[in-house]
Length: 374
Image (cartoon, rainbow, N blue to C red; front, side, top):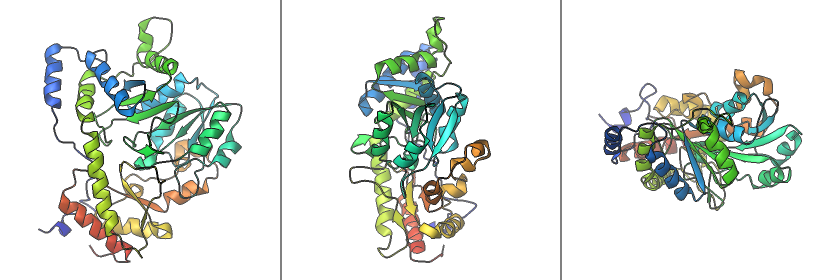
């Protein structure tokens, strides 16, 4: 059977990456022998220290999911019932649901044209005395240079949270995504570059904020003085993260190589281009994102038939306010809508064999020339 026959609409290219073993089983065996498996085990502190060192921040707090990371950051920043939180209309559901968990109001903000960055003019229009925080989002691991909006928010005294759940290793203006705001929130779900099955973490350089996050996610350390929830990460998952963290750079390198092979195959006069980013930015290639303009729907259908369904087909990606639970917060965000209907996403993870990457490159290049053959 040839490689060209391996992928179809019913047997698509797998977008899930299963990292190769790197000693996790030995770590878990040692934990089982020790008997300390809870979130209070010593491996948690080692994992948090390694995360802080890698990203160049003073504090990292490991938690049980990316949603927990966002909820803890919002709560620690004083987001309470009645507060408003700015969130890009491009956000997926897990970005905005923690706002509802705080019984706060999500305020949808448009992005700049052909960008993931918040539109400063729309931010300014939607700031009110009830605004307590803003969330930014390097979706699909692509840089979102929010510099102008960040300056505006800082002048207004509004805390900035980065939802970097898909952006491990992404660089924005030469700095890691997740280190540009007051707090950076990450997921370590199975589909993320650093995967522990379930899990997440919060990065910050604000020691006071780190302490509030730590107390909130650890039941207030049971001192009876402050409220908290149990968002601790279990020790075996921390052990997996500690091991896999050492392979993160190699994974980034492999994703970038695979993306480059596909991009190099695109015809110069074709209809497809990579989604744009700045000179000093660098995607982590959680996905390779291409723009197809008004041809997006046609490309998405053709790619799905070929076994390469983009996120719009796999997961029904669309602007946040087009989901029923957020419909009451809908507001005009034409740039976010245009982005959702002009881009599509291609897997480029290291688990894809070389032949598969070449097959993907050939199929995408053929579509860019106007073809639809399989």
